[in-house]
Image (tube, rainbow, N blue to C red; front, side, top):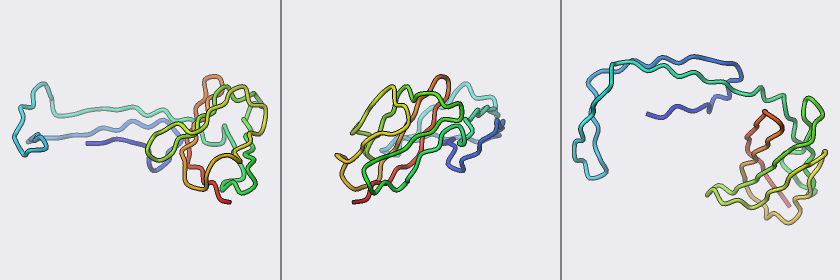
Length: 127
């Protein structure tokens, strides 16, 4: 079972999952023991409102990415990873824009941290 926020919900939401007759198997199809489950699980998701950050242009074609925070604060940490998870760019203390001209064309994941706010999104670089 995987729980993620692929739908991009922006408000707190409680999810209750009910389950019965659980079986677990390993990659070799051997049955594993499952213990300690009571039949329900509640998960609370608190997501940051996407409007807390605005990044543009996306896709980036001129090598410059602009970042605006809703409270006009500096971006503490910006991390860009490729789709394999390798960090290809990182910067800190960004006022409003960052130069990405050295990144190859492709699809990336951008993570932004400013104070207690976090934002993750897809980023496309085109030449």
